[in-house]
Length: 303
Ligand SMILES: [Fe+2]
Image (tube, rainbow, N blue to C red; front, side, top):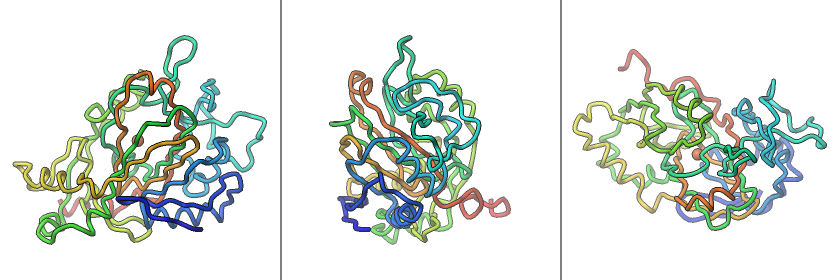
């Protein structure tokens, strides 16, 4: 599998055809993802069944209970079990989770994060959440941009003095999605707000591929151990979000971006409502490192 480096912490797989994906091919993509954290595959076929084959072979479809639309925005209902894209009848519409401002005939939104702000965030809102996200642009995404922040790259270039300050430290978080998103879809709003909770994680982390980086979810409520004046928080935040560590993806139809959600964050660049109302991404979350246990957590006897 051939890759090339993109700027600021992403790689592109260049010899890829998603219509021919197999579990073996998906395993190769997984290994690249664990090492590189942000993987781009451009201009692929947009059949959601093929996308689901790739991602489910990497780490299952974690968000399958949220996949109650088909790709065209017709309601299918909540699946009763995780759909298997390898055995799914191709004549039936495959269930997906849509990220879109598109509305149905009644004017209701048919996707998550339809409009407005979607600032820096990641799917790992707590150590038991899925630590992988994949997005594919289906239509209307040209001219829109999503950025990824690669903390492994940031850690590699981190001055010794700053690295010393975070050594062995954890941060406390409160999952507070209204800090980073305008949640204008009422169904999604209820779902997300019901999930608010406190958690603590070590700042320096390592994924299952041995790649080291940082977890500092700056847009949830976030406080570093012992950092009462938030001096270290601001120093670290300013450093992490330096342009050198941020990859900007300019979407084209069919583009896929997979990302490690332990060691990267991402944000959508703001566009007028009219743009998001025509834009559709397909989203799957998945288990990349099979996490959910220490060392992600702060162990109780160390607090
Ligand atoms: Fe996201």
